[in-house]
Length: 187
Image 1: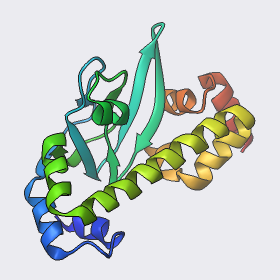
Image 2 (image 1 turned 45 degrees about the vertical axis):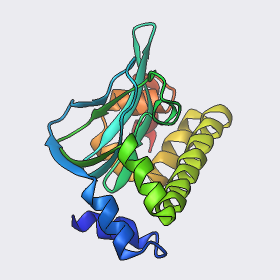
Image 3 (image 1 turned 60 degrees about the vertical axis):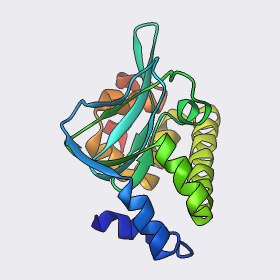
């Protein structure tokens, strides 16, 4: 669980007792590329921590696969709307490569918050980061050119370019594969 010491270093106010209690609820597992962590139409029951590997969140509309986010090493992921509201998810979350993942159930996470309020504060900070990334992506897609979007992805999330397929990147950047290929050829 060495990755969790890195995670908790971002939250120095969490006591060792709270860290141990949180870790005791975690289930570790390894999956191959293409494993679905979450499925559209089901209620998200777990918060995942991708210790090693990567995943993408996507949905299908009019037979199109639309990537909405990427999760890389040492990041959390879940179908957040479903996880919070306890309603069926509209998205799928799929691993993009062999990955080592930890998960904690919604119920165990809530119980941890009652026993250790400092964990709830850390969770709030994770949610704030999630919201900021979501808002930035929304602005990013509405007000930037296709080239600017690709250059920003290269600058701020370069690992995505090496781990995701061209189609997934194009979908995430809201452009066609042909447009992405033209942009890449000019850089």
